[in-house]
Image 1 (cartoon, helix red, strand yellow):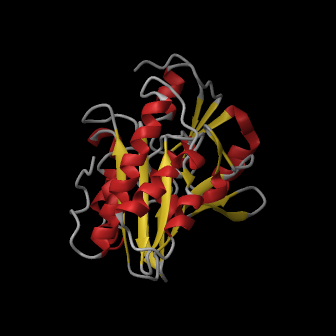
Image 2 (spheres, rainbow, N blue to C red):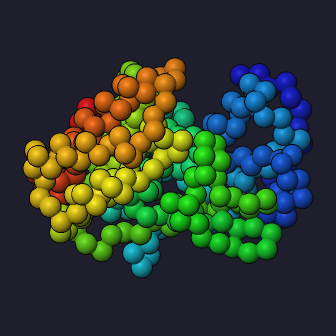
Length: 296
C-alpha cells in the first residue's frame, strides 16, 4: 500500500504533550493508534494530514482492568488483546464473541476498540456492544477530562462528540450487577474479514429485562428503546418475539450500499433480533450455545 502524501510524524511520550500537540495542529493532524483505518484513508488520498501523531508511546493506555465493577479498556488495547484477556473471557464473554467476527487476525492484532468507535462508521462492531453495556468514552482535552456516554458519542457517519484537541484515552464499561448473559450477531457476505451488513447485540438481565442495539442499519450504531420497553418484564415467547420484530422498522433507517440493500437489511435484522434474544435468554438459563458460536 503506497503512501505518496508527505506528513510530519510525531510520537509523544506523555499524554499532556499529545493533547497539546493535537490541539495546536487542529484539523491538520490525525491520531494514530492501530492505524488500520487511517493508513488506508491516507493511501486513498481521502485524508491529507500535515501531521500524524502516534499514540503508541503513551504509557497506561494498553490496560484491561476490572475494578469496582467497571471495566477499563485503554485506547491502545487491540481486538486481539481483548480476545486473549482472562477478564474479558470470564466477565464479558460477549466482547470476546464480538472480536471473533472482526476482520482478520492481522487486523485484530493492530486495530483497537477505541479506534473502532473513533472511526464512527455505522458498521463498527464495537458500537452495539458498548451500547448494551451503557459504556462511557474517556476523553482528555486541553482544558479538562470528561466522560461521554456512549449514547451521546456517535453524532453521524464518521462523526463523534469529540471537541478540538481532545484525545480518547479509554473506555469505562460497567459490569451489570444483576445476573446477565448476552449475544452478538453479525451478518456478512462471506466468511472472513467482511464488514457487517447488519449486526445485533442483546443483553439479557434478571427480571426479563433486555437491552438491544443495532449496527449497520442507521447512520450510527443505535439502541432500540421501543423494543426494549415492549420486552420489559415479559418472558420470551414466539408471540413476544414476533411483536418485537414488528417494532424494528420504527427503530432503524437502513440504506442500500455495496454490501446490501435496505430491504435485505430490514428483513434480516428481524431474523437476527429473534435469534439474538433467544440465544441471550438461553445463555442466561445456562443451556445456550457457547459464546463464539454463530447463530446466523
